[in-house]
Image (cartoon, rainbow, N blue to C red; front, side, top):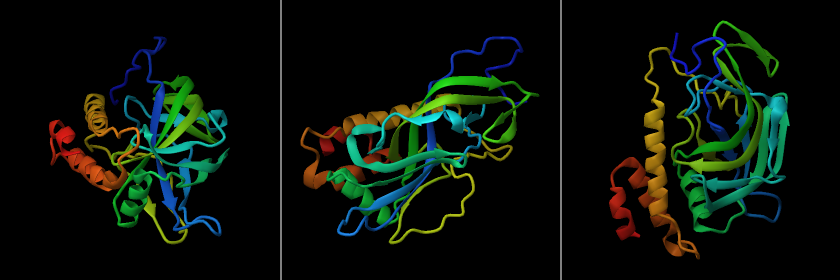
Length: 260
């Protein structure tokens, strides 16, 4: 049996993380509505299947009946940094099939322009969905629960109520299975369960300590490259290239302040 924080029956489970970071599939089109040159996007945020998420020792499934958005239009930002604006959703929906949204790359910042340009050039961005888990329950090994119209076996954490707060374009998403792509026209997508992370038996899964260390490293990079009040302006693309080099490890974090 895989290691789990929840081992003994009738024992109160320890405190769980309350923030969910899951990967999503984002597709952008070349233009928006007639008369607009702003790229639009379609987002498949979640399809109702269990996921292996950072910080959780057992799979997590989000009950679609308990999903809400915390506002009518959800921001789309970069690297979970509210100062790095990309766009916003124009329509968002939760139904029996999953969580979906459409939106527009509405920001005039260099970050948004750089994202569109880099994505069109094939840079493999990923997309992370930030949500708060407001209420949860745990299914022990050997037991099952019906969630989203299917029976699921434990051990399993069920996010009974959750609140979607943001969509974030990242270099490293919640998992390595999904990517943000940009296309001239909308393409049919036949990927099943794009937000589900399936780890084959025997595959090395990063430990929570390793995942937290990597997230801390990315946060340190973002902090070192925090834009001034008026943004990066004409050097925005250079800063993003420097950010990518730091994430890849080719530029030390300590050198970032001197290079911008």
